[in-house]
Image 1: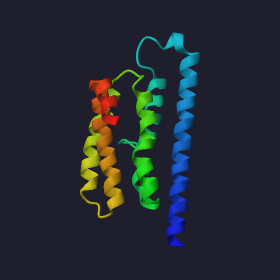
Image 2: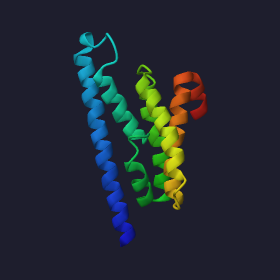
Image 3: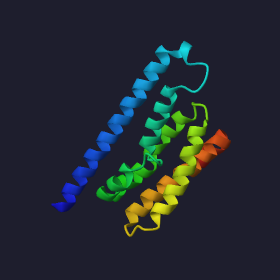
Length: 155
């Protein structure tokens, strides 16, 4: 029964985080379309909102706080799906935005947080979660350097 409660709680947390992120993606995409002529000068706050929502969906630092708790409460097959397939679509969308200092900050934060937070863990699932945060930093770095290289990596 305790395991069932933990799984239900993890599912609800995941749903809430993903729903809010999806709402922010749709909001910022709609606003970018409506305000396109005004925002062509430089990076817009809407682009930062869009990137933040996509990065939250992927579980990169500093938007990763939901990931270890949810991973701890779900089955191994769901852990596999969440840590692999669920991250591909947001990464593809991030390819279409300009690379800014914001993304560089996210890369460095993910690399640092993912490696430091995994040191003190005793749960394999939490170690995997923080390893995923760290790996997202490397994946975003590859994406910034060469999109073709990133596509070859995930293929």
